[in-house]
Image (cartoon, rainbow, N blue to C red):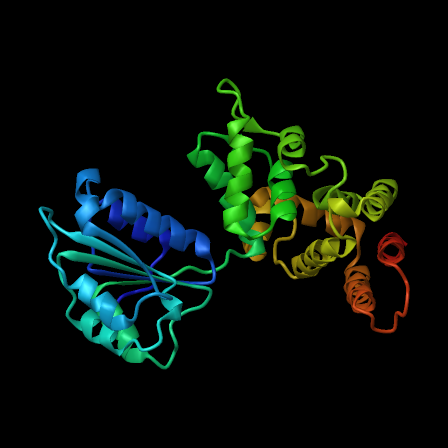
Length: 341
């Protein structure tokens, strides 16, 4: 039967219910979820005493498809099943023997194919069909920037910790969508939390991750929303004088994203309701919609259009177009001046 799109949560639910399939083909650009699924299978499908003879880890750079099939066709020794994990599966050249195996996989084998940094060649429809009919095809996609706050909140919640919106955005802006690095940084934060107070605050983020609680992209955005000219210029000056804190041009996407959403807010049928506006903007949380309600009070629709055009101009200049030598700091000051005047 054809398989619907598989999510990480649905896949993990099946695994934890011990509903194992003979083939798991894990592919995609986000290695974090591929690693998490593989680690769970390696640590939980077999009992510790069964792994020596029934768990095999191979690398696509060292074996060919026929050797993988031979390993998968072995019978388990003194166990109900065996596990065969293939890392770097994207390096396997001729997949025809695998395709044949996928059509009739060993029911006593759990074969895990880890295909990172891409996905199965779209021309190999027979391979895809065979995997979906007899196993699981999971595509691990990069998380969108807008979904990072929810990921951070849920990750900390799963570790019995909470976080406020400002701290969430500080971490998201500083780390970005590299989930392996992001979770590593969150683990560092969790290690420093006392048992009696599991709240992550801006001060904790500053101490543990090294992001200034006063000078960061979140604070710049907040200054723009509230038309705080002094604060916005202080932040630009800070980034200009402290390049290790982050590139000034890294602030451009955040400013652009705010005004782009602010422009969309003007078309919302019910502009003054945070829940309706959040739904209109496809936001995960309604608290962020307050910034757009305030923004519509502080910036007219025409001004927002002009600001978006100016951001594009500054972006082009930052890449050398019609700008032989104006430094980043001056360009950002030019943009901030235009926004407020």
